[in-house]
Amino acid sequence: MIKKTINSQIAILIFLAIFFSISFLIYKDFGATIDEFIVYTRGDYFYHKVVGNDPYLQKGFVVNDSDNFVLHYYNSTYPALLYIINNDGSYETYHLLNIIFASFSFVAVYEMLLLTYKKWQYAILGPIFLFFTPRFLGHIPANPKDIPFATCYLIVLLLILYHKKFQSLLSILLIGLFIGLTASLRVLGFGLIFIYLIYILLESRNEKNFLKKFPDNIYSFFLVSFISFSVLMMSIPYIGADPFNHTLELLKINKSYPWEGVSLLFGMKYTKENFSINYVPIWIAISTPISILLLSIRSIGNSFKNISKLKKILLISLAVQIIFLMVIKPFVYNGIRHYLFIFPQLGILAVIGLIELTKWRKIFVVVCLLIFIDFGIIAYQYIKIHPYQYVYFNIFGSLNRDVTRDFDFDYWASSDRKSLEWLKKNTKIENPKIYMCSASTSLKTYFPEAIDSNNNPYKGYEPQKLYHHLV
Image (cartoon, rainbow, N blue to C red):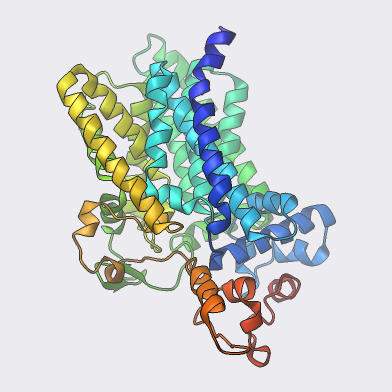
């Protein structure tokens, strides 16, 4: 039994070895984003709040002042963990750590498929499909918000599948813990509580003692909810200071993530007042690899009888998030990054759809050939557009000639690094001065000699000064 278990993990270990080998070669290539400075600085503060019991930070994380909202509405435990490991603040090290943590997404996808099909040959397709999903892969190094959320989301789905198998108190505690962490990263994580309830009720409905087990299922639901909310309060001190009112405030402000700017779709600028609900499905349609998109649609369409537990929980998850999208109508921006957690689920559904085609050998072989071609093109694009894999569009998106003008393209100025490095190498002016048109910290990071000391945009934004500004 132990030998069989070890053998079943060899494939994912080989995949991770290749993944980390590539990552160690390229992790220094990614530019710092505007978002990262704020996230990592918040982790620095949260660490000193907890460990150092700093009175200013104790107040700053729980008292609502106009200047310190960035401390209130976000989970700071992940960036605090990053700070503990990387307290010298190296962006390159941060990017490597983000890659290492994101590897759990590939493991979770693998384990869900292995639990369902018992074959590593099928299970390894999940991580491979996810690796060839550019929107997801490209965001891993420099996006410390959405990728950790997606990873925790997948871990919760895996734990729910395991819970139905083992049904132990420990599994309930773990599910509650990770739902709380996931919800503290993005309020969309609250949907996992309902996914858990719907799944366990649907799984129990055909059992002979369904009515007898119903109270136990409801009890486990409330226990998971209680644990989740407790973890949420610990992860976000502002919630713990006034759980009821501040939770409502969190839900309200996170409807716009919070964002007061504009969003771009087909060249049209939208605000939160006139935002189109079609934004998310359109982005998914144009930025999911075409083979994964079509196979996942085929898999969803073939879901009327004898569906596996894995497919069932994925369909419940997608249904709950669609309902959330329609009811809450969140203001999404920066492309599809807030919904990156959908891509691994589509990848798993695509694998299921491919496995279902094994009944028709000739069709299966043709589809595998088309997938190989599609992934080959993506691999070429990875090399060509590195380190900007996240700007990928499939054939539907590429039909738009003005795709770079009609959609959000860059992610929080991550491309500033290459521009500044080019200027640093090629400018012939002695002591050049460069002025950034955004709040990017890239100039300070990659070309500090070009900062105008008489007009320093970073004055007051060094961590120690930002600290006093926020608290």
